[in-house]
Length: 567
Image (cartoon, rainbow, N blue to C red; front, side, top):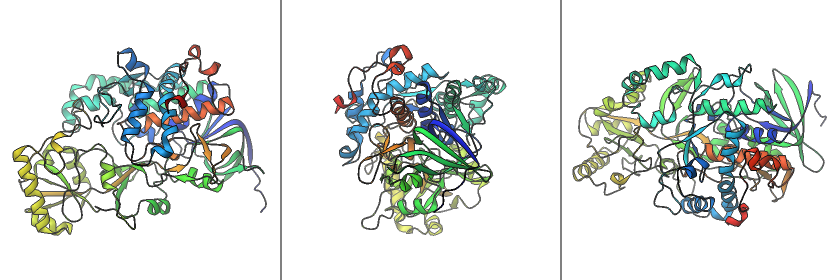
């Protein structure tokens, strides 16, 4: 087959595909070492899912916590990762966990040195406190608000969030915004007005703004509205560049050091998603550009894919984003008078569980179809005044909420066995009277910590008509499977060898932390770290070693032990 003719040619040391947290972290680490970096983003706006997020990051043994007297270490973080992981994962992920635990603190200090980002600790604990290595405080951080002006003349458009980005993450968890939006807005009005006037960004938008400022200051070139469509390989199978398309024109990019795939998940690739997540789902809560481009290209280069059945999943509220239907990922099931029931009308989980996505995605054997779906959230009329955001979505989305004067009539509308639903609610109401959830111990739930006021726990009976129900199937924030990498971010071939010149980071990789999260920030924290590790490896040319760029004088942390010594 004849090779295509390029309309234009570009050269760089490192090509980064994507512009989310993993992509920009990789670009920054490579550029800070003096490499020429090109960032190519498919969308017209930058930041991907990271820009839409709450911006919180999980970074164990970070310098802010150590300065506050928290006793933590990479070794304790590794113990926590091992204790919380699904059965069998340690055999394949242990070296990657050790690498993350070792380099995450260094990554955070590096970002604060090479960007205008500053991070603050949140009051949150590790959610799985019964596991070895867990910490009650110190591993969760959030970026401080940041003015858009730090980008200077580079007025780069950042992807907007469907939720107001005027609030900081600390305000979201510290104020009762979900239940009293008007009251909180009035309380914080002067602060919010000042942020609007000064174009100050918060949460994920602040994170991306700071990363972009750092990348631009280091000379990174950014191309938007450009879709990377194919990798370029040489006779040895090494990746030497890529093709991207924009407005019908082809550009050939030669990357002397390598290509980093950080293009997000594959949740908008309908065929691939259906193959790995069969059965019903409600919505997707990520940009439509997350179509698995990186997965497709890596496969074509011979990469081995893994963890393709892993994803960030939750329930969602129906809304619109960019003029299209969209699932708003908020934890609206955290109400005392709400339960989740499966297709048989039975409760199947602790509704306040931190890793609710695992319960929603539990699979039947054989076949791999969802065990519980379709699922429904069942409540009574009091939910509508307790959670105004749910009522607002119901008014805007006709047919989403179902209502009936009796539980039996509601069951008929949902296609559930009426007797089963009535017995389930009667049993739950009995637990409410005693204050003890005998089935799932919901009364003991503490996954998000007492300091998070978004969630109203407890047990409240479901008895006040009309009774209401809304769909509660899987909604995808990001898939977390992809090319298998080694602990240095290098993509592995089907036969196990490293594909020279090909790297992967973030949710595009076979993520070592899958559906079972270990903290609220265990997507962004690891994403930033794996991007940093990829950039570090590229800067070293092979396996990363302590060097001038990463010395304490340059803003890094001099390692006391190599990551392998943690194993």
